[in-house]
Image (cartoon, rainbow, N blue to C red; front, side, top):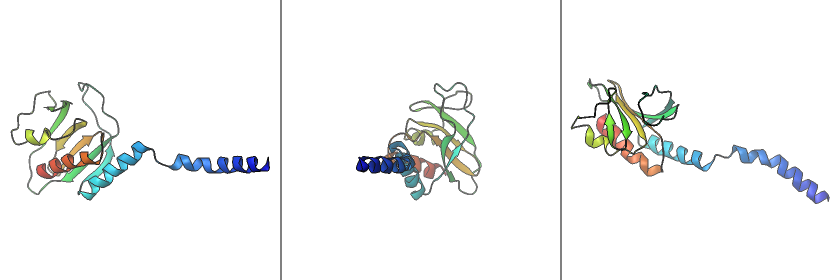
Length: 145
């Protein structure tokens, strides 16, 4: 009987430690974020104002990956992905930029938004999949920076 009491007390003491262990999903996201950092990308969770016309509501806050742009970049634009490979601007007009479209078509289907300012190029990504999904994201951000 004493052995069972000791085992029970040990289990009660050690059970909160199991709560501290990250889930598989959290471990996968940490691996994606570390792979992105090793490729020179920055990441932050940012609150976004999503257009009401998107077919599904993206998460808020959403992981935003970014990279600094080269000096002298003066163009600014923003495109949302309505469905896989269907990129539109704020007026829901399709992207017609011949230099930009090939890069946008290589992105995963769970990239919600790509935006360029004079200082940064950034994209909001749902981080579905595995670490291999970081490579097309990093390649696009590097090419467009």
